[in-house]
Amino acid sequence: MKLFSKLFVACLLSLLFCTTATAVFADAQSDYQYQYGQYRQNYIEYTILKKDFLGSPTLDNQQKAILAAKQTIISRDQAKASFADYLLSLCQENQTNYAPIKPILDSLNAAKIFYLSEVNKAQAIVTPAQLASFTTDYVTNTVIQDRSFRTGVIACKISELVRIQIGSKNALDVIIPKLAVPFSTPLQTRITDLQSQGNDINDAINALTASLFSEAQMDNIDNSSYFSNSSDKIKKIQSLQLKWINGLIDIDINYAHS
Amino acid sequence: MPTPKIEITNPQAIELIAKIKSGEIFIPFKNWLKKNKWYLVSAAVTLILIIALVIGKKLSEGTPIPVFTPPDIESPSLTPSIVVKSSFSGIKDEIQNLNTDLPDPFIPSFDNSINLEAPLN
Image (tube, rainbow over the protein chains, first blue to last red):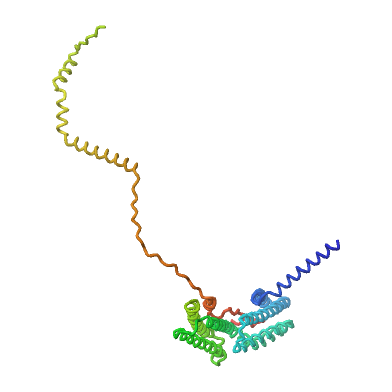
C-alpha cells in the first residue's frame, strides 16, 4: 500500500514538473500574445464600467470603474513589457552581435524595465485622484519608451540582414578552397566582384542603421512615413543580397562542382 | 378410275376464259405498264441501290478496319541533363523569405490615457 502511495506522489510530482516546465519554456511571442489578450479583455470591461460611472456617478460605480481602470493599466504595461521582450528575443535570436544596434536593444531593455515598474506603481491606485495623477505622469514618460518599439522593429530587420551577410561571407570562405588553383582570370574577376559587392551591402546596412539615429529620422519617428523610408532601404539591400548569392551559386555550380 | 370431266356452262366464265385465251384481258395492264415505264425503271434502280448499300454495310461491319501506322522514323532523343543544386540555396531562400514590409511584427495600439474623465467631444 505504501508503495502505491509513493508511486502516486511521484506521478503527481512529475506531472507538476512537466506543467511548470511548459510554462517556463513558453516563448516570448506566446507570452506577449497572452498578455495582449488580457489587456484587450480588461480594456473592454473598463470602457463599459467607465461609461456606467459617467452615466450614473455613484460611489459604487466609481469603485468598480477605478478597479477596472487599475486592472487595465496593469495588463497594458505587462503587455508592453512582454512586447519589448518579444522584440528583444527576435533581435537576439539572430546572434549577430551587431554593435551598432546595441543602443536600440538597450532602449528596449530600458522600456521593459519602465513598464514593469509602472505595473508596480499602478498597484497603489485606489482613488480617482491617484488614477488621474498616475495617467498624467504616464502620458509624459511613456513617449520615449513607446518609440523604442518603432526603432526596435527596424533593428530586428537589420539583425536579420546582418545574419544573412554573415552566412554569405561564410559561404564564400567555404567555396574558395574548393576552387581549382590557379584561378582563371574570369573566375578571379567574379570573386573580386563578390567581395566588393559584399562590402557595398555591409556599407548599406551600416548606413541604414546610422540613419535610425539621425536627427531627421528621430523627428519623423511618430509619422507613418517612418517605416516606409526604412522599408524601401531594406528592399534595396535585399535585392543586392539576392544578386550576390546568385553570383555565388553560379560559381559554386560552374567551378566548384566541375 | 375414270377422271370426271368438268364442263363449264356459266356464260360469264366462258367469256372470261375466252378473253384470257385471246389476251384481251391483259391489254389495260400492258397499257398501264407502257404509261408508267420510266417510273418503274427508276423505282427498280433505287431499290437495287438500297439493297447494294445494305449489303455493303453488312459486309463492312463484318470486316475490321485496317489500321495503318506510319513507319518508325529515327528522331533525336534529349540527353538527360544533370541538375546540380548548390549547397548555398538555403541562403537564397532565406533572403527571398525575408519580409521587408514594416512594421513586422505589427506594433499593437494601447490606450495611454486610462482615466475616469469624460471624453472630449
